[in-house]
Length: 94
Image (cartoon, rainbow, N blue to C red; front, top):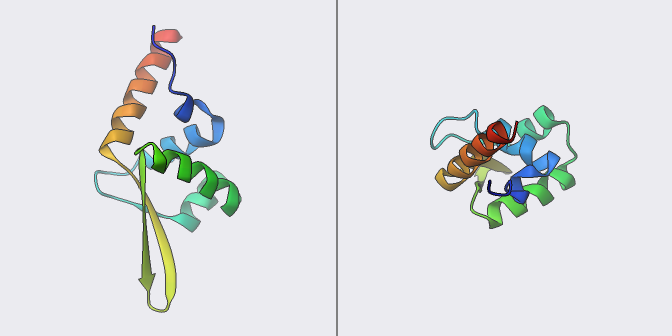
């Protein structure tokens, strides 16, 4: 059996991927909403999102809404595939 993806297997990143996987294709979630859902600090969430983004699992879009900056986070097709593989491996392990 293949090793579980260590990028996803970390508790915080597993929670992030699980939350983002509930979104439809090309949908995203506002950073504050994701932070609220996961009860994480902004710094902790940013750190884990950066690791997932570097792997191509999530995307972050920074936009200006009115006069304020906003960040939206979504799961990529590569992220969905990695998460599906992770879930299948976990089920097989159990």
